[in-house]
Length: 332
Figure 1 (tube, rainbow, N blue to C red):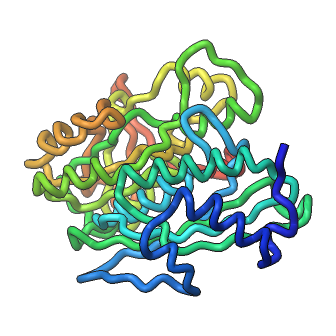
Figure 2: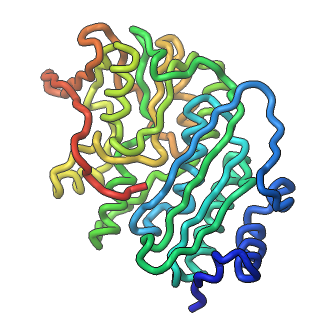
Figure 3: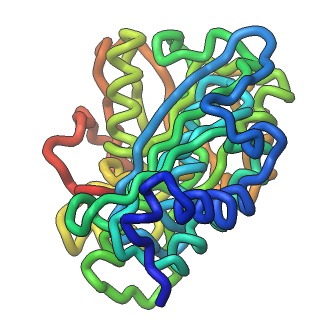
């Protein structure tokens, strides 16, 4: 099997061949193929800018891979600020000996994911390092987006705002754990890894009054809600029965002693919207297959500012705290 060699990162003929025959072939656009030291971009108005690094293990899992994760993760961070994703950079740190077949599969996955938002990879970098310096492959992506709606912020949530979850939770964390431990679940369990811009764009197009958006990645739903409560100095009162958790994810949680609200997601987001727009927001989201389970899960009050209160189906209530410790290392 053809493998990546140190010479592919040396800046010479092998590097040139890798860039042109693999990256340019899949990411080709007018800006990238100019092969300049920096991309010159045309933008108007305010922009959002984000960066992230991806080190998931294993590289391939049910529902995605590190490449899909890298593109979706960066595009989603832009989307959560009401920004249309435009341009991405992509840097690869590749371990010597990594299989070309797997690298191409990852690059193809990235190209396919880019099509969902229309964003382009316009610059990048490749480093090949000796065996053992990295674990197979790390990817860094940065993104620029055009802000389509200003004022969306974790500090903008107001008393009365309704909290909406776009779908069921915990799928990514449970899927990566299952793959890492070699577990077999006799059901359909896959990562929720997905580009969220189409759903966010629909909310903006419907003129939904959105206070805040956040994708529930590391730390899961619990982390998002606690950050919002603290940043906006409100109490978020959440109905536990309204939070959708698949039977497969619930089974994984019971097996390992996890809470689904703490598990990572990669295609699930939370929205805080004005109460008069809640039904419209849920309806707009449910038009998308990956948001068919969108539902209202709670609302903002002044009961316990800075806290998240979880109401059970039995009438009891408790504080939902931030996750503690590292539940699952290297999930994204």
